[in-house]
Image (cartoon, rainbow, N blue to C red):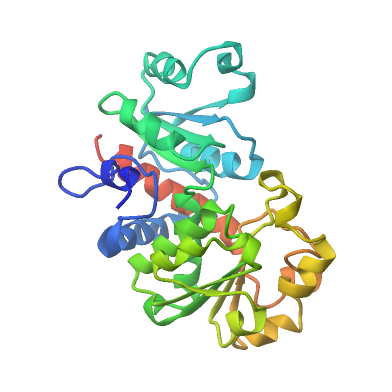
Length: 320
């Protein structure tokens, strides 16, 4: 178990922080999903608010830009009635020589209850968690190649709503696994729910060999990787994290590992199609299937708010 997994739980096994899906275990993962299920109706009500975090303060501290993820966290906190402050690291005093630790301690002095951290360096969220004051919670909004736990949880939440027997499914994770924090979070979340058949699929340059240690099977051929899969989870090609030798031109990648109406047929006829977004159309996925009958991509976006509400409520709502 990684250091992040070890420090995110209290002595009695409750969430103190959320840094990774690794080590959550079946009971706690299921509790998060069940709590999120209870919040789904709230997101559809005429008045989309509950008072669980009234008087609490949540800071979205994003050193790496992501409008989609930040908006989901912000909306989740507002729907729980928390006060929310958004800070972009590039425009904060960290660009003037202030360290991460300085930023944390300065904001803590304003009596913040939770920080949502997004950072380009792996381990940044764990750093904050190790230095946070007692009673201050850290929620990892994505750190480097390491983890994106709420994305992993919303993915398995979406799967469970369509295919409740998650343990018995065959799940194929396709694309840029090497640079993907989402892939690792999905793998740990699926394994917590008992899924045995997890496959990673992609060119050799984008699938790290050490993934064997995670108990997944590695495929460098799309047909074999998708054969009879129940779920196809595509990953975004992260061009910003790679140099040219990793990646063939977009059209060549699509010919080998892109999903279209023909290659989707390798999977089961009722297979779910997923993608964390944003989509590179014509590269990892063709436009006609992106929002076709098997796609649950828009559901993933919607469920992301409920999952983040659940995690926030379980961590800082429990102390009220």
